[in-house]
Amino acid sequence: MTRTHLVAGLALIASLAACATPETRVRNGLMSAGLSKPIASCMADRMVDRLSYAQIDKLSRLDKLRKRDPGDISVNEFVKRTKALQDPEILGVVTSSGLVCAVK
Image (cartoon, rainbow, N blue to C red; front, side, top):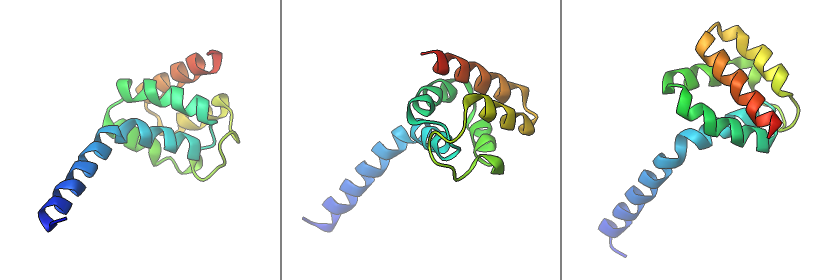
Protein backbone atom coordinates (compact mmCIF):
# COMPACT_ATOMS: atom_id res chain seq x y z
CA MET A 1 0.00 0.00 0.00
CA THR A 2 1.39 3.37 -0.94
CA ARG A 3 1.51 6.31 1.37
CA THR A 4 -1.14 8.08 -0.74
CA HIS A 5 -3.53 5.12 -0.31
CA LEU A 6 -2.91 5.09 3.42
CA VAL A 7 -3.60 8.81 3.76
CA ALA A 8 -6.74 8.51 1.61
CA GLY A 9 -7.95 5.58 3.71
CA LEU A 10 -7.39 7.45 6.97
CA ALA A 11 -9.18 10.51 5.59
CA LEU A 12 -12.16 8.34 4.63
CA ILE A 13 -12.31 6.74 8.07
CA ALA A 14 -12.10 10.16 9.74
CA SER A 15 -14.88 11.57 7.58
CA LEU A 16 -17.15 8.59 8.29
CA ALA A 17 -16.48 8.89 12.01
CA ALA A 18 -17.35 12.59 11.89
CA CYS A 19 -20.76 11.75 10.42
CA ALA A 20 -21.73 9.65 13.44
CA THR A 21 -20.10 11.84 16.07
CA PRO A 22 -22.91 14.06 17.45
CA GLU A 23 -25.38 11.35 18.42
CA THR A 24 -22.63 8.99 19.57
CA ARG A 25 -21.00 11.75 21.63
CA VAL A 26 -24.30 12.66 23.25
CA ARG A 27 -25.19 9.01 23.96
CA ASN A 28 -21.77 8.33 25.51
CA GLY A 29 -22.00 11.54 27.54
CA LEU A 30 -25.42 10.57 28.87
CA MET A 31 -24.12 7.14 29.81
CA SER A 32 -21.12 8.75 31.50
CA ALA A 33 -23.60 10.87 33.45
CA GLY A 34 -25.13 7.62 34.73
CA LEU A 35 -28.16 7.04 32.48
CA SER A 36 -28.75 3.51 31.25
CA LYS A 37 -27.75 2.65 27.68
CA PRO A 38 -31.34 2.30 26.35
CA ILE A 39 -32.42 5.62 27.88
CA ALA A 40 -29.21 7.36 26.78
CA SER A 41 -29.58 6.09 23.20
CA CYS A 42 -33.21 7.18 22.99
CA MET A 43 -32.52 10.61 24.49
CA ALA A 44 -29.45 11.20 22.32
CA ASP A 45 -31.48 10.51 19.20
CA ARG A 46 -34.03 13.15 20.19
CA MET A 47 -31.58 15.69 21.63
CA VAL A 48 -29.28 15.99 18.60
CA ASP A 49 -32.29 17.00 16.52
CA ARG A 50 -33.52 19.61 19.01
CA LEU A 51 -30.41 21.22 20.53
CA SER A 52 -27.63 23.21 18.90
CA TYR A 53 -24.03 22.04 19.10
CA ALA A 54 -23.35 24.87 21.55
CA GLN A 55 -26.17 23.67 23.82
CA ILE A 56 -24.97 20.07 23.65
CA ASP A 57 -21.47 21.25 24.54
CA LYS A 58 -22.86 23.31 27.44
CA LEU A 59 -24.72 20.24 28.72
CA SER A 60 -21.61 18.08 28.44
CA ARG A 61 -19.63 20.48 30.63
CA LEU A 62 -21.96 20.14 33.60
CA ASP A 63 -19.54 18.75 36.19
CA LYS A 64 -22.21 17.09 38.31
CA LEU A 65 -22.99 14.76 35.41
CA ARG A 66 -19.68 13.02 34.92
CA LYS A 67 -18.03 9.69 35.59
CA ARG A 68 -20.85 7.52 36.76
CA ASP A 69 -21.70 3.98 35.77
CA PRO A 70 -24.58 3.55 33.30
CA GLY A 71 -27.80 3.06 35.23
CA ASP A 72 -26.62 4.89 38.37
CA ILE A 73 -28.89 7.90 37.86
CA SER A 74 -32.59 8.24 37.10
CA VAL A 75 -34.02 10.48 34.39
CA ASN A 76 -35.61 12.56 37.15
CA GLU A 77 -32.23 13.14 38.84
CA PHE A 78 -30.65 13.99 35.48
CA VAL A 79 -33.35 16.59 34.83
CA LYS A 80 -32.84 18.10 38.30
CA ARG A 81 -29.12 18.48 37.71
CA THR A 82 -29.68 19.94 34.25
CA LYS A 83 -31.57 22.85 35.87
CA ALA A 84 -28.20 24.19 37.05
CA LEU A 85 -27.45 25.25 33.46
CA GLN A 86 -30.27 27.81 33.68
CA ASP A 87 -31.15 27.28 30.02
CA PRO A 88 -34.90 26.76 29.56
CA GLU A 89 -34.51 25.26 26.09
CA ILE A 90 -32.00 22.63 27.24
CA LEU A 91 -34.16 21.84 30.26
CA GLY A 92 -37.26 21.48 28.08
CA VAL A 93 -35.55 19.15 25.62
CA VAL A 94 -33.97 17.05 28.38
CA THR A 95 -37.29 16.81 30.25
CA SER A 96 -39.40 15.89 27.21
CA SER A 97 -36.79 13.47 25.88
CA GLY A 98 -36.42 11.83 29.28
CA LEU A 99 -40.18 11.45 29.65
CA VAL A 100 -40.70 10.01 26.18
CA CYS A 101 -37.75 7.64 26.53
CA ALA A 102 -38.69 6.47 30.03
CA VAL A 103 -42.19 5.54 28.83
CA LYS A 104 -40.99 3.62 25.75
